[in-house]
Image (cartoon, rainbow, N blue to C red):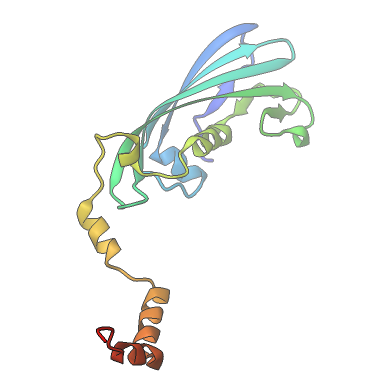
Length: 178
């Protein structure tokens, strides 16, 4: 990513604890992938524990994310908080996985933007209906009413079939008051 500011530089740091802070906003997510949030204001706090041959990053992400309600499509800013851990070591880069980032020997920095993106993505709720999270969020009733009045193509086709079905016409002729 051009102009990446989510790099942890550990070359020259003493063994021990070091802190970093990163901004995660709409531009950050736009540069990484198609992300369906707007108005994102997150801060990632990274505590780096440097050891002789290993780096451990304890990550805490806090702030708000702008999402659209799955029910009424109204935009909401919801509170967001998550944590994660990443281990960085030197070696063969093909050995990297979800928990361990392997960087080449001699590297003195690591780009953690992809990991930050993934930790946010997997921490988002699968069902995004803010009014179910808190009573302070209210769905757009007008949008819900409009959506409830819309029939799918299958529903429309079934109604048309029911209207044209002669079996239903015969049933209508039966007088149940005999």
